[in-house]
Image (cartoon, rainbow, N blue to C red; front, top):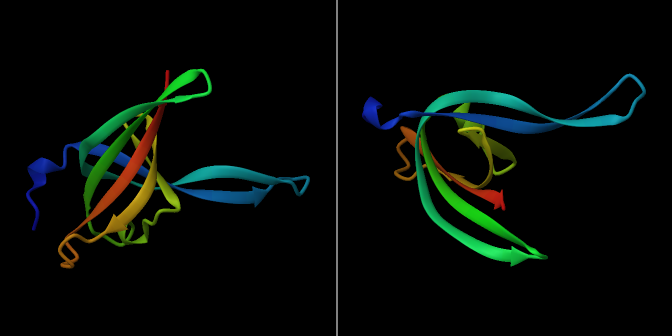
Length: 111
């Protein structure tokens, strides 16, 4: 079992859905899959020019314990970390033991 002390941050995982409204038009929304205690590490950061703006990128590595909900997480989900939206690049079990999963993601920052 992984030590409880390393899971200090709350991370919300969301899934994209499109449902019809009363007029039949599709409404695109994000629904919460679950909020979990996680170990969050900012792995790298960079900046680039996009048009006339500087855009920053922060790569995150997030570890969460495996349970029935975290087993559903894929790169079609997104994470909310400290109020920031982080798109998911990959999800994997680093030791193939079913104890925790690692989620790699990228946050875009506009300046």
